[in-house]
Length: 471
Image (spheres, helix red, strand yellow):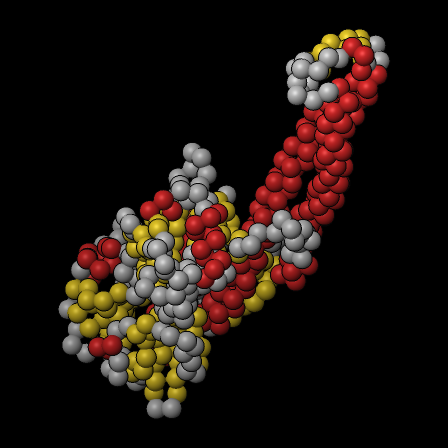
């Protein structure tokens, strides 16, 4: 047989799962079924005082099955599912031929189908072959197709039963396989498919989360470096411009050296510039005498010198921050563990005078700002946000205002809006709910009613998105 990788949802693995369930769950009844969030489902089966918990987690564009003895305890609010099956006993678990799916069969032709199709994995309840309820209602085919239509599959697999399930590291990637791969390192092996899947799921997702966090940190520091580099160029440009200009104290000295040539009422005078050994034209205020014009230039010189000193100090500060940022980028690049990332995430010491007054996030190159309290919400929405920014807020509950900053020529994508909506849900009174409706609209459609309390606004042309509260 050809050696394949990423086999945790392959047909042969799914057959092994359904076969093991059929043996394991004989005599069990469904005790509880619920979703913790839009991507996590839990089913608990009971036989006398024994419990078995099954969890389906949709993450990293794939589906992961976890099976454990004992009762999975609810934490926080959950969304109950498949209530009509609670208390009913399992007759059998049947594999769908040539499909990566199987049915938990109950009386009255009720079937709870586990469909392990990677990122499209789902659990659907069928009554006499017709769909009546689903865990992930966003997958439209799963709630509109009869079971016979769902099971139409052109794949045909050879007869094969894995004797052992292995978790290996191959080129730094964690893989679920049936045979050892060339140059791979064995991490775990078992004849029990659930033991192998539990080990694989924990470690694969841990590695995946680490890589996601590492990439996010790199983007964060590289964006910071780009911002600082731009500030450095602007500061250097300003200093070069000052270097090309005549200094105000030099102009004042030239005026004082040529007092006898300047008459009151002139708006300009051509005088000898002894610094450069040439004549120059100097602007004057006609209502001031020569000494007063010189004094005006001396005053400007003082302010000019202060501005130049501040520019040099700012440039030094920017260059120091650039060095620190480069160090952080190098730390993150070399990180091999979450602990390393925490060290790399200590970050740059931010100047409190320039630190953002809002919570800052980034996604797809967009900056997302979140208000910290009612007064801060007003500051973000009414004073800071641009009319073309996207504004979001958890619907009908108290919570933070969220603003996606507009980028010229860039559209607000659906994943971007969904991510910001999850932040709005998380930073609201509904954060412990399974799903939260969040309204979004352009900031130009948001108004504050006259006399309204801090944080209170009204909006027009709003759309609503149902999301899981999530950072």
